Amino acid sequence: MINEDTQAAITVEGLTKRYGELAAVDDLSFSVRRGAVTGFLGPNGAGKTTALKAIVGIARPTAGRALIHGTPVEAARPDARSLGVHIESTGVHPGRSAHNHLRSLAALAGLPADRVDEVLELVGLAQAARRRVGTYSTGMRQRLGLAAALLGDPAILVLDEPLNGLDPQGIRWLRTFLRERAAAGGTVLLSSHVLTEAAQTVDDVVVIHNGRLVFEGAVGELTRLGGSRVAVRTPTPERLAAVARRAGGRVQLEGARVLIEGMDAAQVGELAHRERVSLHELASDDASLEQVFFSLTEEVEAA
Amino acid sequence: MTTLIRGELIKATTTRTIFAYGAMAVALAVAQVLALILPSWDEPMSLADKTEAIAGLPLLVLLLGLVGAAGEYRHRTAAPATLVAGRDSGSVLLARAGAYAAAAVAVAALATTVTLAIGLPLLARRPGPEVGAGDVVLVAGGTLVAAALSAALGVALGALVRNQVVAVTGTLVVIFVVLPLVGVISPTALDVTPFGAAQGVAGAGLETLSIGAAGAVLVGWTVAALSAALVTERRRDIA
Image 1: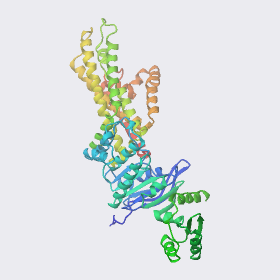
Image 2: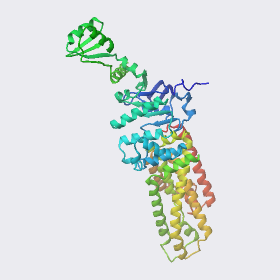
Image 3: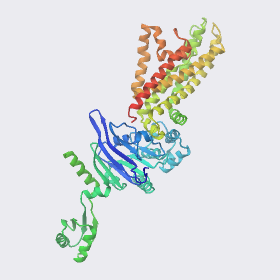
Image 4: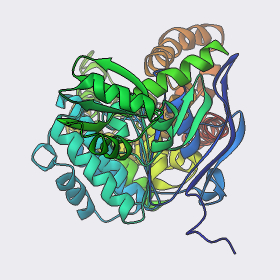
């Protein structure tokens, strides 16, 4: 018997989607673990949305397959109770109100109508629920898409660029909301091209470029790929630079600021204490996800 | 399937489109009654002409189904429906056809009520045979059946073409350009087209087919179109 606790929530195996000669997704394989927020990252046109469509079963793969809890998505036919989906290219009739849009989806899923008011309240659209969606801002449409994905309170959420168009409060709310769902054992797969924002939300990352996988792992691993360094502010930068070099660090001086590679913040702090060097500031300066992402995709371009 | 039809019916009745079609149906019904009854007021009118004057307009609700189904792809609402339902896209399409058939019956019932309210008193004063209760039941019943089948046919065509503008333009070209040309070549051939058969079922009176035979032809076209749409839908991406 398959143990659902250890099994990946979503598994993608050799997924390929071609439109004529163009391979939008090319032999893509990765898995998404339960109880985590996984970022599906890549620049615009990388094939993220196409891959997500195939994963949830609204686009037919040319080759390969996607599995939900170990069952091919075509056979699993997940409904709103097991899989919540918000993909930008799936929409709403502009002449219909948000309330009626969700009411129709609830009826199609066989969910009680009062669930509509609950999700509208949850995403902060209750006041505007009777307005036609054509009058909504981008952020309001994003919230409506999230409401639709949450209708059946599913264990798995697949969200395409959910941070787009949200105001800072909305981003903060969504980040907290997704973290809480993951902490409660839920699974979230979200795509983004805004890498720095996604980095603050996700546990794991899957990076694709030109439809192909370029990285899969924990977000920390991705950051470490670019190397880590320690940034120090001190009134005696030359002295700190000298002792750090002797200790094996690679040092770069920027005025009163010293950047040390090859040592972590604790090692630098201990060294400064031992050598009686005053420190005004000591911080890890990990390479940003964006820097690593660009280097990864540049490598792919070069190859 | 009931939950699917209910969900699709909510979609079909919660935009302004359905009200626009209802208003158009009433306006056209009034125009038809007045245009066919008032001219040559003192001359006798045959029973066939009188029933044709109160016949329904199934082509309008064919466009309702067509616009609604193609609009699902234009506004990208077909995918969310399939996703939340957890059913195959073919089942959702069948539910959509059922929902638009029900909506079309409501529109046709409204238009027929207006037609009969205006037309019957005028026809009673027009020389010629009297339109009996049986004739009225046959025309009204046929109109509702034709509306349901025509809307389902429209949904099938909309799902096949998917592009709303192309689907509507193509249908109008067929109705107003192709069919008149067919009529010139072979007038009786029009009776076996879906458009001719629909008008026959709705009481327009065909040269070669009874209402029952026209109904069988229309059912055949609708089933064929829905079957083609189902096969195509299951092979295409939903979004």
